[in-house]
Image (cartoon, rainbow, N blue to C red):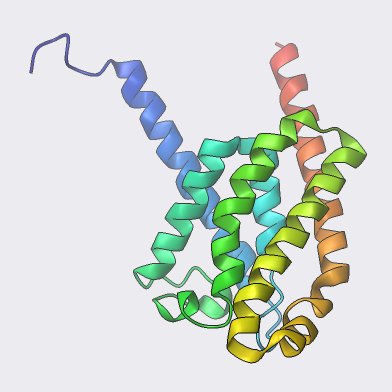
Length: 186
């Protein structure tokens, strides 16, 4: 390898920092998954709170990377999902639509979030919850029927979606305010 082909120290450092951020994001998503209330057919978790908080802070590409690494970690059997689950079953069972929706909704919210302030950010996160619930419902309806899927997989999550949208908005706004203050003050 020639000297010109060798990555610079700053490039290596940037890759290591990015990998650390991805792993930290996966840890946040795993912890949010473990904070769950067992319900049938889908548990109530803090996953969407984590997804939208990450989306509001990390940007679309990094959000996508975090979500994909988290889901791949689950696929290979790491216990990073609700109930400390991992493996293929969560991706073939009734909750698969909710999990896979994160791959679409997280980066989309991350792309739109910089264009939003306060109430608009809350509306974005609420719309993101609606999309996650819709995609999750569609998958679940295929398994148990539309009415049962709505009653068990959508309706119980309405108030949680509102609360988690508000909490994610607050987290993002406070973190951004803190980061901007930290950059300005020596």
